[in-house]
Figure (cartoon, rainbow, N blue to C red):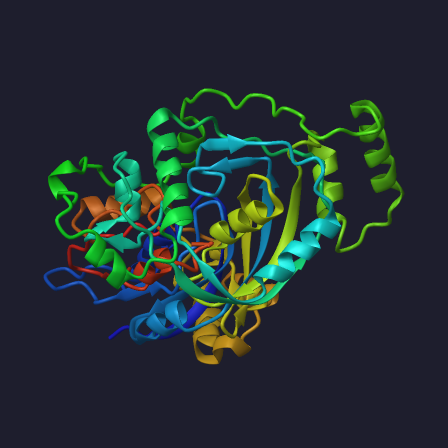
Length: 448
């Protein structure tokens, strides 16, 4: 019987899917349990996550081990989550975030912090939200992202009720930054985006019952029409390397009394004169590594939302209300239910490490739950006491697989099949199903 049971949280890094984090942790616990015994069956292991984050997102990711997997459903569907989100104005993308391609661009140089503050007030409290087309929401038995990836007409997008308990601007409008979109969307993606916009405008208030009546006698999408997309691991470099037409210079449609050079000088001087504080820290960081892009500025918001809320869609809707295009470029989950960043166990302190290095702290984290606070000394002291820091390498793990230590199918993901988020979405609704049974072939759900 597995001695580790419960829920703990890790701080997920960038460029890795939530399912891949689970897969790596699974191997760590299997190694700790002795792996596959000669002449016997493998020790059973159940492990999963309680609410997915997109590969580019970071922050609190709940992990359930053993009996703890039974708690993951509540963590996915019944807990509020809080985020810091960075929004890039001037470009709207197919996925509402940095992993999509640009479908629309416009001048956003006239947007001020005051305008953003006024707009945010409209999104606090109970709101109605339409999920992004690149999501796992199902319509007529077909997931929305399957319609989008296959260039098929999206027949209907069901709206959902969400609650935003906190929404505040936590940065100025930042004109100097290092963000650039991947490229322009192709004709097929443009057509899908136009169809989605039309649905929201003309039939956005249609209930499911009304939709079912309206489609009577109309042809539906057959599964045979869907292309066979082989599941694969998320690869950040591969996503960035997608060759598309470059996004051209945004045309300036708003007049300004000062020239571009004068505005850049004024912006940099004003920022340099300010003492570093919570509000301008991100702006100062971007000024050191970016270029002056006043027509496509960025800003940061802090949002606490109910389960099922898409942060990338919230970012898109805020920009739409401002009268400009926009998409999510950074996301960090600060809390999930009672768990916060302070409760996170660092991944590098457990992945591929021998059990004696992390056993004490993980046991403590599983026992104390949200009351647990990670301390560097808790692990460092064990390392010193044991007199070493031997790591079980990836090569050793692969060697174990080749000699018969099967773990089921490889962790796999599909493009935009889930939340931030963001995440807080139907991506998350399937996330709690990502429970791995060691010793059995398991079909992985796409989580980011």
